[in-house]
Image (cartoon, rainbow, N blue to C red):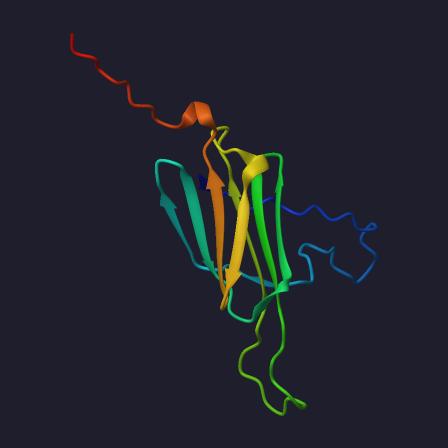
Length: 134
């Protein structure tokens, strides 16, 4: 499973005098650290998403690309007087192979740790052949 970031194309009006064209999307994201484990039944992607709750998670598969997005919920109360860092939302994408059963993908979020289960298709699972002795 290869990591892939799909580029975002923005359409902007022609450059006006004195203004530069838009080259990037305004929203900034963090890349969550992940571990990918493989078993005989499939893959498991484990991503650290601190500050993200169940309603802030968005997991999609489109054109064989797994997209993980997480919106961070601000837990600090009151108005910030001085901030040296900001909690950014999370974004990461992976290219899936044709051996993943995309209709059986499941996910679980617990204490800021996301586990995405990517089961293998039946034809991709190894099979053991029994040997009979006569």
